[in-house]
Length: 374
Ligand SMILES: [Zn+2]
Ligand SMILES: [Zn+2]
Image 1 (spheres, helix red, strand yellow):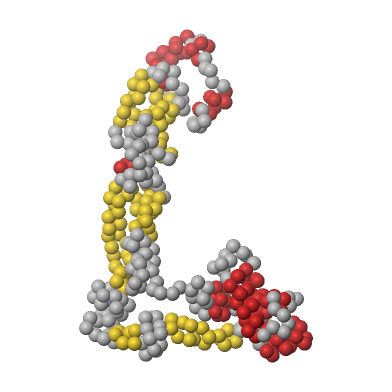
Image 2 (spheres, helix red, strand yellow):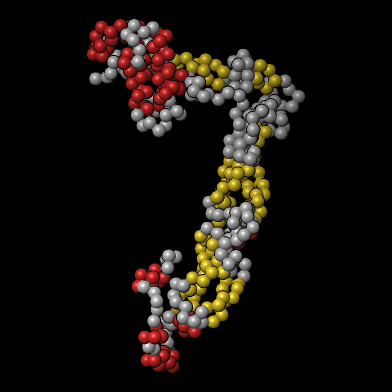
């Protein structure tokens, strides 16, 4: 059974129409989806309040309810029908008119919308910074009519349809009966003024979409997925309002040689097993070229050597991260007869002392599995 409508609206049984209206508005304000997006019950609560209002705002219905309760209303053929509305937003629209019904409704000229584009750079460009051309489409003020929508030299007059107000009262049939709401005038689109001869280039809209190409400075050190914001480079706003912004999503292409971790770069270096045992100097690739690396005798698989300052720059600062070189000891996969003999000889001479290590089993596992915790 539905709740008592007086209770739902929190009014006395002898409340005036004015008090009922006020109570409902107050409740609706609290339940509005813009205010109350976090409350999943808001829609149900609003429907309950709307039903209570529907009963109490109608004299005849209210009298029936007062005498016979909900059952009296139902048997009289009355049934609330709020499910006809698609969403709570539509419900508010029907009740309070367009633009959220005065709950923070926008006034004044509308600012332009934002535009989002994506660009791709490679790792080297991300490290050094790059200038990238970005092409996108944005709404701009029509140059031909200078944004006023009239063919140059022709007059602009007050809109006949709305008398210059830009808005009209429109009656809509809803489950609550006839609702009067305010809508934007369809002739002047809210301007209140119309061009007698609409601009040929923009068909009187004063604005038009155009392709733009601009050069965007991608700063050194940018990471994959970061966005740059270019203020005022989005769609143009209505006269007197600012333009929107351009957001540039920067994607950094994957590199075949380096993995990035924060400001560090990580690479793998193949070292033949005998060389790992003997040690020596090795050439390793950096982002910009190569560098020499000193391998100590007895280097183990998974050991990490650090080359200072060969990583990525820190965004907005001068210093750079490091290059971490993970030693990948490569065991020969095929052997000639001679090599096999040599290895057999070596194997025969190895003692416990040759292989001894201070590492615990866990440390060995961590290193072999490539964990940084080793
Ligand atoms: Zn124009
Ligand atoms: Zn108008």
